[in-house]
Image: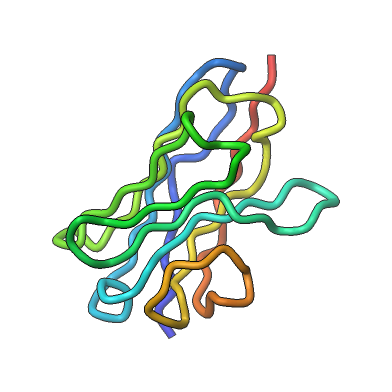
Length: 125
């Protein structure tokens, strides 16, 4: 089973920006909603953002990142992005991209069946 591959994580200071990428090859991913989740040390995995697959993309964001993060996708490149601005220490986590098991963009981890290995984002001064 092909997994998506995340990249772009790193160590940044509060207020900085990062752009995460998720390379998800082929038709397996291009016809499904894709989402970003994150998991901080000792905490449960939580929803960050989701984007539909259709033109005129539907997006949804967790309240904690709304206005700071932007999810987008380029189906021609089979890539999902998460632009993260005004980063805060509480954004520190491993970030995962995931493919929805169904056609409707949702927030629950249980709605996603294919996950990447994750990329670490650390926000610290």
